[in-house]
Amino acid sequence: MKLLSTIKKIAETQPNAIAYVSENQEISYGELWKKAEKTASFIINLALKPLSPILIYGHMQPEILPAFLGSVTAGHPYIPVDTSIPMERITKIIESSKTKLVINVSAEPLFIEDSSVQVVNPTQMSSHPFLPVTFDSWVKENETFYIIYTSGSTGNPKGVQISANNLQSFVDWMVEDFPINGGLRFLNQAPFSFDLSVMDLYPALASGGTIWAITKEMIARPKILFEELKKSNTQVWTSTPSFAQMCLMDPSYNQELLPELSVFLFCGEILPISVCEQLKERFPNAKIFNTYGPTEATVAVTSVEVTDEILQEYQTLPVGKAKGDTQIVLLDENQQPVPEGEKGEINIVGPSVSQGYLGQKEQTEKAFFIYNGVQAYRTGDAGYMKQGQLFYKGRMDFQVKLHGYRMELEEIEYHIAKSKFVKSAVVVPIYQNEKIDYLSVLIVPAEHSFEKEYQLTGAIKKELGEVLPAYMIPRKFSYHEELPITPNGKIDRKQIREKVLL
Ligand code: AMP
Image (cartoon, rainbow, N blue to C red; front, top):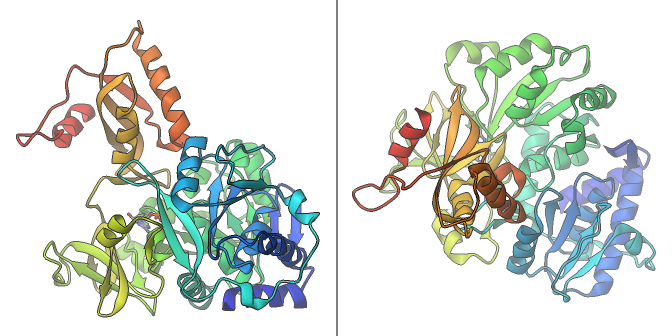
């Protein structure tokens, strides 16, 4: 695979160049490749089933990159799982992916009930005798390189399989079409279990750049965050618009803090015009790109540079034009192309579209199809085309983005309804300035012995914390005798929205 060969070559020709900085620790390209080879050698020695995935548990520790590269050079896809994911969800991921090896790069011990699953840490792997790893063992072409689990409407997360070819198509586009080449410093804000992280990780490694990790502990403490940003001297900024918006609240977030910042790459949610205007004022030398795409099509497939002309011309920003090897097709409910300017479902056709969800045939068949002989994905996003630019017009289902995190309201409802304290529940997003501010849940409670509502809320939240990551737990809980029902017997979300918004 070209990407892996490039990283190997950088490790050989510029072994001292810094690949990754995390929590004051630096790892050079030379060390990265050496550690990846050691990891691969350990994995190969285990003789796991060919292509069986390896779960990598951690946050942004320095050892996480060698674990990713070690897996794929040993011929196994990896599943990045952030430490914010609760144990029950990890168990589901292990079961559904049939993982037999977990590499725990975090400092916390990880206990997996299933005794057929081996859990190892980097120290155990490095003390293992080293056997040379050859190119033949690497993940190739249509074999899966990584699997990212996203929220699923049925209550279980879905594993999106991204192949070596999918990733190569994405990385080639980034390196060729964006001004990010030449060993620049990239900011990494998204945990590795979200595919936004792939937008800095592999383009940086493919161009001899440095990835600077911004951990969740730093993000939680603004003073430390800003000190770290200053130290990073970031040149390529990759984040959700929400994260940049949060930084903009501090007046010191400007060119003085990051004098070399030359590119902002945004993806994952609507990029508000106001954010771009402020960024242009504070970072007059930087270019801003809005990119669009789902995990299923490998990070992003369209892009537009947000120039002054674009800002003047449009009231909402376009998400841009498709990358060269990809086609965007807007289809109506009869699967017919819609004329220019009309709203349709955004379908992505091209070489970065995944083969589907791991082990989930039905969901794969619903979302993926072949269009003119090429792999295609129905995004569930509505959009329209104008003057060659794609515009995003919201979702056609109950998937939402909150602070950049993708989630299915139905998955949250499924877990709340499973609580013994709940008869039925519906989750509604509450908007502020056209953006989701928080989630509110309306509950018809089952019999319980709590005196106060806050105690009931505490008990339900405790149960939820065991199955859902914290960002998926609604902020507001309210209790009702019944929920409004439509004439055909479904929960009437429209009426609820109106009621909740009152
Ligand atoms: P994820 O798989 O987490 O990347 O989420 C993909 C979804 O995020 C897409 O299907 C869209 O609904 C939304 N999304 C991604 N990029 C953008 C963007 N630039 N503007 C608006 N929504 C976006």
